[in-house]
Amino acid sequence: MERGSKIFEELVVAILRNSEKSPMFSVAERLEMLKALTGHLKNVRIDTFDGLMVEYAKSMQAVCILRGIRAISDYEYELQMALMNRKLEPTLETVFMMPADKYSYVSSRLVREVAQAGGPVRGLVPEMVEQRLRDKIVTAKQPEPRAIEILDRIDLGGKELDPKAVAKRKKKA
Image 1 (cartoon, one colour):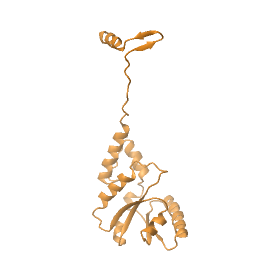
Image 2 (cartoon, rainbow, N blue to C red; image 1 turned 180 degrees about the vertical axis):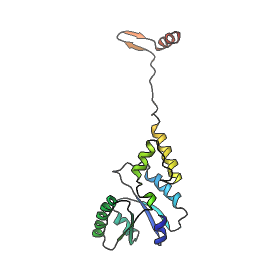
Image 3 (tube, rainbow, N blue to C red; image 1 turned 120 degrees about the vertical axis):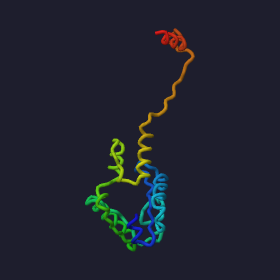
Image 4 (cartoon, helix red, strand yellow; image 1 turned 90 degrees about the vertical axis):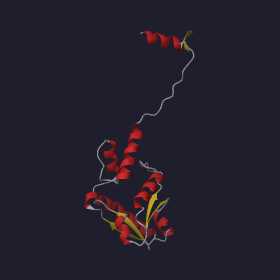
């Protein structure tokens, strides 16, 4: 985003609301973090969209889609996407950017897996994201609260048992 903001007059970072994926952070959480992390970039705007990216790009009067590519596997997928986007909207260009070397192997899946296993993710994501990630993992590991029903009497096939009497007997033992 930093490098893209230096190339383009305006850069809109758009988050797809995809109901088929279950990311660790909600769209609202990602929106909030991205706005905080790009606040110093005056020509960057963060937004969300549904549906086709080319339709969203047209509605924004965009002339270009900027995509990042980390590896050959990314290139194959992104090439297919760019060609389909060109078929759907011939006036919209796609520009690919390579990451800095130190991020070329980083993916959200790998960061999540390392963090969930208790490994260090410092330097792989911004500090604020690292903290939010740790908070999410701690919250996810906490057991759900349980509700128990306390009965006045317990029926044991015709015999009633007073739970208070059982508790008194346990205390004596």
